[in-house]
Image (cartoon, rainbow, N blue to C red; front, side, top):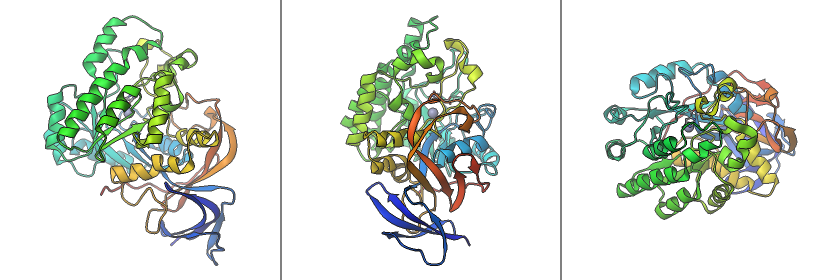
Length: 443
Ligand code: DOR
Ligand code: ZN
């Protein structure tokens, strides 16, 4: 089968950057040689001046199949991922109908199977009464638990009716299932209280007041108390405030992990004036001091990974008045360019970006065969050009929703080629392969 070598590049792992050659055979990494190598007489791809990353793993996307394919589908979502250097996505269960048992999982699996152009996995969603069914489920990345709902208005919800806002039910999921638990930790009662207080206000900036940092803190504190009590593997999605980080630091164990999103790293509540509802998202963007705390938590290891929470909605929906606009921003295509630009700005190292976006997601979520450029691992590889400086533009955004809060941002550092299982699936700037991705396994 297909055999080739990536020559003259700089290999980036979570530990080091070095000149090296990557030999690929039958969809796997055959071997890595340090230093430059002429690779003999096999096919060569010259990546001089470029960096070679393990393909990124985004543990948090909403690709909207089934029920929301006007906003996103797997053809568009996959292309956005590929153009963002992401080769594996783990997809959330808040679909219509939601994934709440083996049957709804199989139905979704059947729809995605022939459409995905990247590798993928699925979450199941917790409700007040499905702990028994969830405990029996096989082949899932984990269980998503919404401790707070994602309301568009009080009337409409984008969390698909998935809500576990009582601690007794949360405790059941901790003690009666073995799956990884991924928590959307915002306290529902707290949000509802602030909603009443700010009722009728239509300035999008009110969103960060309604979903006050206190609501996230309360939920994280409750969840971590319980996780510690049972030594329970628990992952906190989209941590966004200094108070949550302080709590995580107090409770941190190997079995407690946390993610941060690019939108929380690069946008704050000062940006509502420019972007309005486009940056309405749950949890909301926070103040600049919280953002500084997130970057510090990346440095000190309190944050384990970056995940996008890619949650596309139609521009027409986002253009409604605040109270009727849905929450969520797309992000799977822009995460890596934003982080590479931050590397060029001296805010973070290449190794740390790899740790946060591929190594740790693979290790901490048990995604087998990925996250490392080593012999025997899958040949999911992202080629990066750290010199390339470009303006983010709708024209080259592949998500079906076709907008980004980062539209018009000029960034330096972009993925220019993306391989999935040794197949070249993306080449700058609009060339895509057609091979179908595989569902991942967990160890
Ligand atoms: O802003 C959000 N949007 N937060 C969520 O938890 C759900 C998501 C969505 O699916 O739109
Ligand atoms: Zn989400």
